[in-house]
Length: 170
Image (cartoon, rainbow, N blue to C red):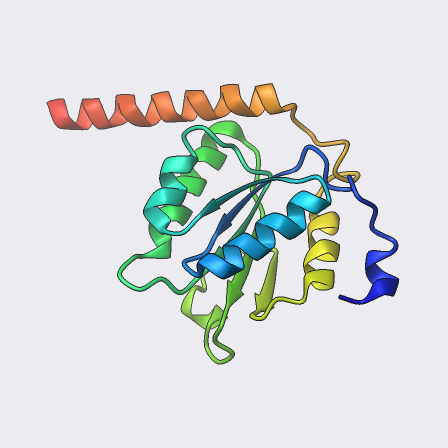
């Protein structure tokens, strides 16, 4: 980390910011959780796409940091769930994409609108700056209160369950 960059970012800068880290590399997930928590973020880490989708039933992130290469799993399952939540709640959830691959990674996912791309090993200074720029008016002035996020997410889950029941009955 560069002390001149991180010195301008204070502990607590990300207070109240909900971040979902989706990474099949446990060490990367732990590193990001510890680092972002230090700055006040509420971080949930998922080691698989399935786990991330399940966590969205009770955790409404403001930002997602997601590895795009998963063996045996398709990242589109998560992206489809996010699209469903966003369409219901009308709140966009920015995605910061990470990868260990240099060539062709972002071209593999042309339909995904992502807010940023970071190559592993992640430059933590760039990550912090990227997150700060994605937050409306800084981390302490989020658009929707956490209880509202929880309520909206619960409605999205209920809507999804009703749709599934309806499809099963047809």
